[in-house]
Amino acid sequence: MTRFVTRRQALATGAAFGLAAQGLASSANAQATRSPAGAVAEESAAIEALYQQAQAEGGKLVVYAGGDTATQQDGTKKAFLDKFPKLDLQIVVDYSKFHDVRFDNQRATAGAVPDVIQLQTLQNYPRWKQDGALSHFKPAGFAHIHPMFKDADGAWMAIGVIAFSYMVDTSVVGDKIPASVNALSQPEWRGTIASTYPHDDDAALFLYKRYVETYGWSWLAAMARQDIQFARGSHTPGLAVNQHQKAIGMAGSGSLLAPATNPVKWMVPDEQPFLAWGQRAAIVKGAKNLAAAKLYMSWQVSAERQLAAFNGWSIRTDVQPKGNLKPVYDNPNGNVAEFVRFMEDRALTERWRQTFAIYFGEVKGEPSPGWLGLRPGA
Image (cartoon, rainbow, N blue to C red; front, side):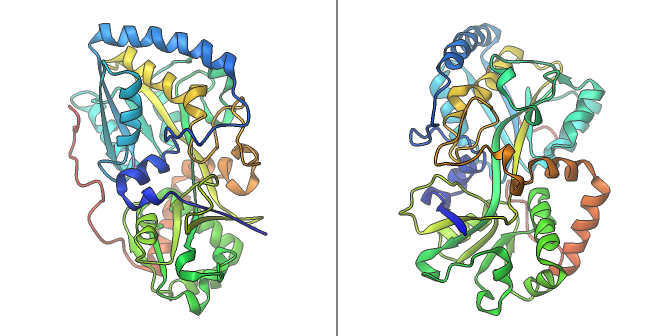
């Protein structure tokens, strides 16, 4: 049986999609089945103390965040500043694969710009820890973060869960909803599909790899004949579907808790692969705004914040999802651990990247966040 739910209509804009893609929207509708009230009270006191320290420190904070558009973290910024109005937060959004080498280059030259670095390129964090590039910090509630979503020493932790699958505009397809990605290889879906390039985004790359492993090389050959509308940026499938340019979106973010009245359904077929991961973040060693960085990390992983995750999934073991969802780390079809291993094997990722290039052609187009240069936010 296929489970499907709608994505928010607000995903028709890049900014709103970014809010969803980070899984951190401040929605009152995304409450968990039970609230860890004791954790909320404990964390609130620690967060208030850090807020006072951050103000005394100067009240500024710079975050480098992986994403697709300049406005994609506007929702996160607003939620943070609504709670901590006396601070000045700057979030610089770029593809994670550019932010990580930018950070490396800054450390090797004029010094790091960000106080916090928050990326999809999971493989960097153990290396940065070993290199001494990260400041160890364990916020209140750290013990409740699932072990796969944190470094035991507090060098890094995930701040939220992001999930990729495919989506369908039921106002276009009616009751002919494709039951799986395998069905999308059929001729009837030719010209109806939008996708980010799998060989431009490692999360999409992994998901396409799992599709090939599940459905076979013949599926990939058939998809190469489907006249897919490829674009740069993982927000683009959602844009294309919500703007009614295409009926199907592949390798895009969504929610299992979105209103059933929305025509766009985010599909998670039973016993079929999808992808979920914890978006990692860390405080930079020598951060200019250390108290503010600790405040930001504490706020992001707090029970209160995790209860507001738009897709219902949390990095914490004491925040239970509603809607009869199992915790994402207990869902084998979500490939949470497998994605980490994939990201750490850069030779493997490169082989798959070039494989999809020979099927779908080279990546074309300007990067959706624009070109930010060496030291944005400085």
